[in-house]
Image (cartoon, rainbow, N blue to C red; front, side, top):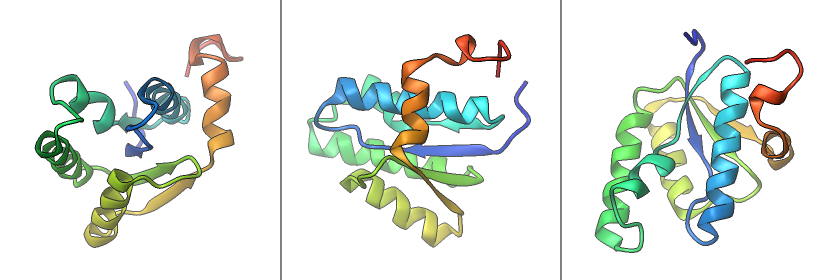
Length: 123
């Protein structure tokens, strides 16, 4: 069982949702590989809420911010901060949760090669 920090993964979702979902999944793999426990609300809530309906989108962001309160760190992943990410960042600063900027290139490595195929066999 993972013993690391619980980290909140923030990355863009809207727009090219297929590419953005793949990027978020890779960011989660990076966290697991580093021994942390990722939480990615934007991978969970669009499965049960309609992100194209403004009220449901705001509900999903609010639920994510509630989860953020239980996390040790917020990871801002990639080179662009979306509107939802900006709300998460403001919440983290308000709650005193440390923010880590994770560059696109660090996550991109985990898009090309799943964790189980990496040297060493497993995270």
